[in-house]
Image (tube, rainbow, N blue to C red; front, side, top):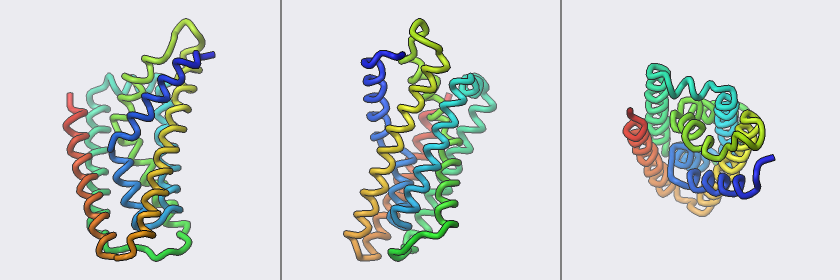
Amino acid sequence: MMATASLLAFALTCAIIEITPGPNMAWLAALSLSRGWRVGLAAVAGVALGLSAYGIAAALGVAAVIESSTFLYETLRWGGVAYLLWLAWDAWSTAGDIAPDRDSTDHERRSAFRRGLITNLLNPKAAVFYIAVLPEFVAPQAASIVAQTLTLSAVYVAIATAIHALIVISASRLRNLVNDPARLRTVRRTLAVALAGVAIWLAWSTAR
């Protein structure tokens, strides 16, 4: 079993990382403002699956392979940057397309889930987290490294999902408070610019 103090320290680290503005935060807020909380939570589920996939990959050593391969890392890195820029453009160009308050369709939820999944599978910082941050909390002498990695990954995904869900709900409430379509359009375009900025920052910060 892992020490409680180690788990708490890791949980605090995850929370600090997740409340730092990033691609998920800006995109989830823009999406929820436009399509409502149901579509937003579908996107959160996709994000969670993407982060979980990296956790499993880290436990199996796949994340280390990506980190050590320049080709794989750069392909992932630029693919993620391009996808984030496309999401930013999509948010900007459809800023005036605010769906009325109604039940979302299965197609909208599936699309949001798929985008959330792809965004995080193409996020090199997720791989770096599992390579650089998570191992610092693994104690080789305590228990199976694979078991510890999976446990820590589950903690990270749970914290990230909770924070992402809070972002979705908060954005949805803002959507209900700001009934003026022009104001909502301004907020969405501001978030789109922020997302584009995050994409540029990601390209710079992950460069080798």
